Length: 388
Image 1 (cartoon, rainbow, N blue to C red):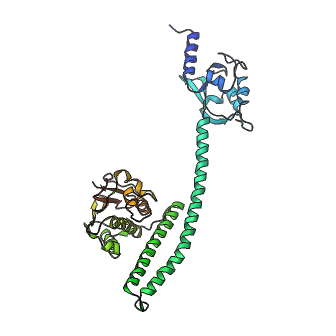
Image 2 (image 1 turned 45 degrees about the horizontal axis):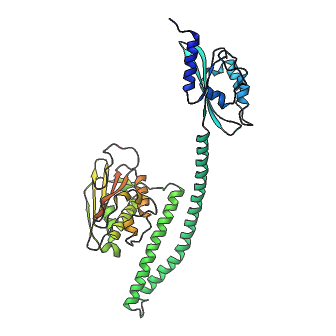
Image 3 (image 1 turned 90 degrees about the vertical axis):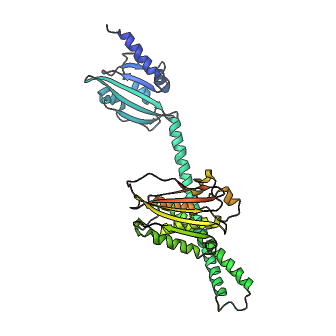
């Protein structure tokens, strides 16, 4: 037994009222089949037009369009409704005169090959559009601030480099055998301290400039075949040549393995940063261990020390520029927090990972995992956590 038309209309009306959007169902003869209260209130149509079942659509269209913002038009909207072009899915975002924005969707209704009309829905997306606008405005402001910061960093670094070069040059002249003259041992030690700190300032400036370039544009890497054992040996020897590096016992253990496709200079810079960190936070009676092993499609390099370690909740934050763990800042250890941020970026550009582990108070463990073939999708085991 078929249901009476009145019952079908009630069911249709109930469905429309349950929708979270303004909705109108248009019949195949361009007549109104049903419209919910959200649609009526959205366009302030109460008492202005007949929206009862069977009423013509023609008077509804201009009233809805009159709510659009000045200068906005949907060419052919009225014609689309009246000539049957509503038989395809259509979507548009429409600004209204009162400042709201609605998203209109037209969904054709078909059954058994028959065209039964169309469902028109109107979602109020004003809040979403406002958030998008605010986010875009904030992004523009942040972009400008970043540009100004980068320009300042570059200018300040350039201004600092010139006097530092002079300081280092004069230190070299004064400490050279021909220039020592009557300088006492204590005076020579003062000059060495000046030279050592000037060198450190130059490294900080180099990190600042590199960070600025990385923010302004992607770092360019020069990929070639890298002998891992040779690169690690050079990085450790370079570190041992410094007073800080020579003060801590360092062990290197690199198992035989295939060459790696990477930028040797940048990877050695990563190792230098990790070794400098290890030497800085490890007492003179401590130990630094560098181990490297090829596992499947990856090289794994671990730099472990017996220093102050890293608090667990800071093991991700320390890879953010200018962020340092509390036991590093509170302990009076010098540093900017840029080295680890630069190192992770370099490793990620190689398609690898750099993670931190260890135990606070007992030592830190940094694990580098690099794909043999360089950046790009490779088959192999998933990421290994630091300290695993």
